[in-house]
Image 1: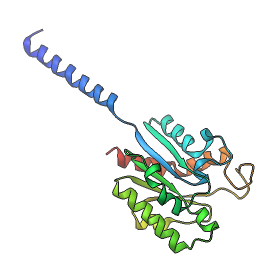
Image 2 (image 1 turned 45 degrees about the vertical axis):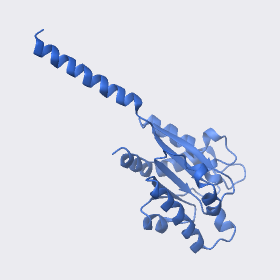
Image 3 (image 1 turned 30 degrees about the vertical axis):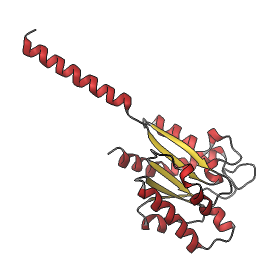
Image 4 (image 1 turned 90 degrees about the vertical axis):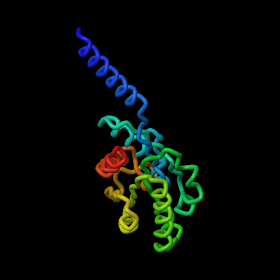
Length: 195
């Protein structure tokens, strides 16, 4: 080999090594599923709740992600604001925000619910975290999502189908369906994060 050829081979090898090292050091995209019992997976094993199922589906599609389940049964937007820093780890890239059903069950006015959701979304935006807001059943939070630059998905399942033993919360099969309902929005956020 001539000297210029050897030099080119060495440069190509160095570039390939640098590329491989950079990929090996790349961090997965960190997603936090932040919500109430619909997020935590009340009455189903944790590995069958939507955060675990979403992580499995995204990984199967080739996305390097981790999905943290930060759901607590019975939680409200007021509770979410109190535990925000515990739930949203440093390095979070995407947050899936699912709150409001318990607020409504407890008689919280929609105006207050919207104000608290706005506060949560704006706190996430301030940390440069992409946000997907989830509306559950008849609770439509699309306007608050749109007003704050968040994506939105409405989870809808037929009444009394795909439910856990209490007849209200989702079964593992129900979670599989809602993962399908939200997959396009999550992948849109992944594309934003990877830019």
